Each structure stands twice: as C-alpha cells, then as structure tokens.
Length: 410
Image (cartoon, rainbow, N blue to C red; front, side, top):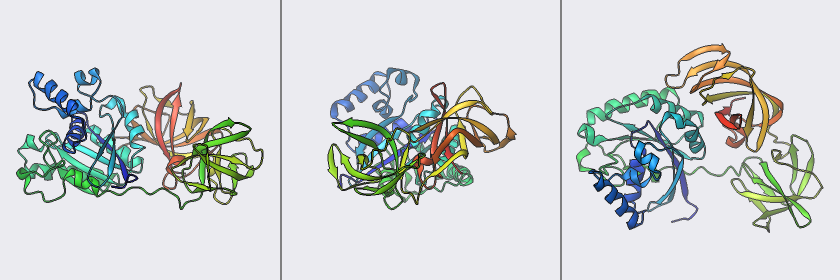
C-alpha cells in the first residue's frame, strides 16, 4: 500500500442519524482499534444494558456521552486494504455548524448520512448545502438504520428519491447511494444477506473507489506567506504552496506590493532543495533584500491573483446576532486579514429550503445564506473558488469570533 495514498473525507448529517456509530463500526470492522479500547466500549455498553455502542469509540468527552451529541471536529485514521484514510467527523447539532464548515473545507470527499426511518431533515439539507457551497464534488450518501425499517427496499427507495431530489436542486450528484445499518454492521465493511436486493458496493468499497484530488502543480504559482523567521543571517519566508511550483532562480512578484524578486533558495526542514510543489509547506529566501510579511502572496507576474477591494461572494452566516449591512467586521482569506463591510446583501436565502427570503436586504440572520458584495478597507488578493480554493474561501470575523464562511464568486 502506497504510504502517500491517503484520502481525507468528511461525514455530515442530521443529529442522531448515526455519524459516530458509522465511524466506530468502520474502525471496528477494519481492526483499526487496540483490543483494550474495544473492551472498554463493550463494558460500557453492557453497563448501560445496550448492544455494543460504536459511537462510544468516538465520543471521548463525558459531556458528549451524556448528551449524545458530538461537539467538535475530530480526525480519525484507519486503513483499508488499498489506501489510508482520514475521517473528519463533524458535529451534527445545529449549534456546531461552524466546526462542520471548518472540517468540510479540509476534505477531498464527503459522506452524507441519512436516517432511513426519519428521512431527509432540516440539518440534512443545511449540511448538504454547505458541501455544495464548499465545492465538494465527490459525495457518497449512506442511508442508515435499515434494521429499523426491516431492511425495506421500498422505504430505501422512497427516502433515496427524496434525498436525490434535494441534492439535485443544489447541484450535487452523489456517486453512490448505499443502504446500511451501522449498528449491525450491514453493508459497512461487510455485505448483508438481509438486503440481497442491493447489489452495489459496501460503504468501505465505495470509499476505495473515490479519487484523490491531485495537487495543483500544473497551475501557476500561488504562495501566501504564513510567517517570516530570522535564521542566522538570513530571512526565511514560510508558507504553504497552494498552486504551482516554487523553484530556485524563479522570478516572482509580491502581491499587493508589486515588488519583484528572484528565489535564492528553497528550504524544507532547513535543508535546501531545488524546488517544492503545491500542497507542500516550504521556506525560501530571496536574492534581493525585499521585506515580506504575513498575508502577502508570492506569485508569477503573468498570473497574479485578483487584487481588489470589492468582492462578490456567497456567505453562510453563523451568529445569533444578525449581520447588518455596512457593519464593520473582518475578512480572513488564506493568511490575509483585512477590515471590511458588507456593501450589499443581494439576496437572503433560507439554507434549508433555498427560498429567497428578501432581495436587497439590510441584514442577515443566523443560518441564512446570502449573495453579497464585500467592500474591504484595502485591496485583498483573491481568486474565484473554482480556480483556487485557498484564495477563494474565507471567513468573516466579528470580535475575534468566526461568524460566517464564504466563497468568492467574483
């Protein structure tokens, strides 16, 4: 198995639809847990007079165990026979939408879980809308708790059709729809003789069929500066290459200053290299004594990001205190942070129904989506989200609290 063959995926869905149980079962079935952890789960389940509660393997905090909800984003690791996986377990409760967006923004694929007994719920729609907004194209839908409906194909088809109708309205085309019972282990890693009417892959097989997103090495260079360190007598600029390649002797331009310079050395872990590519964190020095600082973007002169003080964007507002038009807040994009205001709220949209609530609105309420125009205090370097996610995705900050996530539509 190639050690570089790792896929990160996010699991989202309505509260109590079984995310933690699914992950726990997956870890159990792939033998990814130490025996003492399994014994702890079995003992705790028996003490409560219940079947093995696989969610217990995920919900570490006593508060979570008592309340039955997952309250933070957790990364979990496991292997199949063909690749490594990182699961980004995101909260399902409506109050934890911020963490869910943070988790989803790191993923290459998504799993939407739907309780086949309850069907598509408000948070199912809200979370899948965010997957659409964040541009996640690889989506698998699992219909959980088939044991609760006596493994009924008719009920599966009914809920599947409801889900596909909604997902189609937000331009999500799932690669697979899989009936499972996470609690019983049916169609998770192992096939189920109680659903012989289903001849598709198991959940684990569906994951093995997903594609890794290739690093954007073939695009032009974009490198937001994270920090600058003084090492002996030289200044080492560090950051993560979002797109392209950084090479020795390469001529680059600094945005927004417009200064041009040449790359003198490329360094990783204080060892010099000839080059570094997209997705790598790197240090570098320049041949001229140019002063770089956090927030500037290193690029090629013929492929600069858009430097603008007016941004068109889609925004998901996540604060109980409404956002008023022209209110002064901050925008964070990559390593940039700049004061801004919402110049225009073109449309307020219900995130669960996609109903347009108001056009040319004066405020944005909690958990509403909006098409907006953002005016920044000084120019900011951005790209359309479809071209470069890191410079096309941002958060809005009020009083040091993240209140919204958004993507640049230009």
